[in-house]
Image (spheres, rainbow, N blue to C red):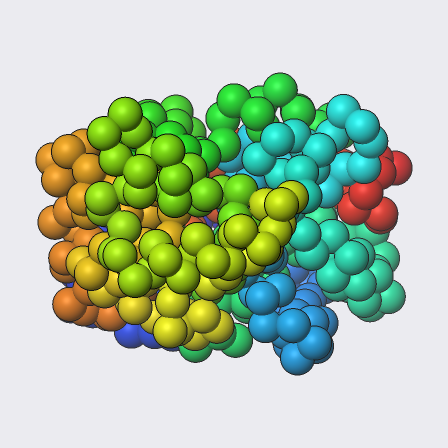
Length: 330
């Protein structure tokens, strides 16, 4: 199996459909042509199933992207988030009542199994589906590195401690990214994934009342937006009412999310903190401004960061297995 080597390339060479180069002096044993012989139609099958899912519900694009993200941050990109069981990652606090799309992954996996039995891992299905979700939402394309195998165990404790939280400070989020080999640019670029999808009131209601000893409402939240959110969340005693992460550009993958941050219209504290917090001003504000002014800069860095994230501690060779049912080990 040939190795895919990251090389250095200039941002000026960026094109939406290019194979992205990363300025990382490392090689990966994942390859872009891993299934060229064993399952040449895998991309066509996954794209078809993702497109069908998005026709039913555009929000599913964000849900599939989030599954890949939450999978890779715990045990590496091994499909462990998909495993059922009360001790599974899907029931960890960051995923409970919020991680979704498992039925869509089941449908994709079934379709793939019908053409290539026992060949394509669930972890690779997640990686391809995340890429296709971005493309079908208007975002950039890239060639996905493949060859991951599926893990045999979930890690609920790891999910509870390792996943970035909307309540974390920017420095804490940067530290959690660093723990899996990602840097501050990756923090900001991947946060841009919030240009699609919804969030529940429970993830941002702390900004709407009793915010601090001196402020009732988070002062970095634009006042009319705060009033709108207070009205929305007061109607949902369980905190499960939802609203767009990217106001006025809910389903389109673009750089509008970053424009919102400049206007204090970031929904989550961890979103707005990239621009407005003291830690954000020191570490991330400049990138927010760059991406708000240039969708091509955002797209280029987002693709690079997705490839890096998708390469976190993959199981390869004879490690793990190829699950036939993504919810259970063989």
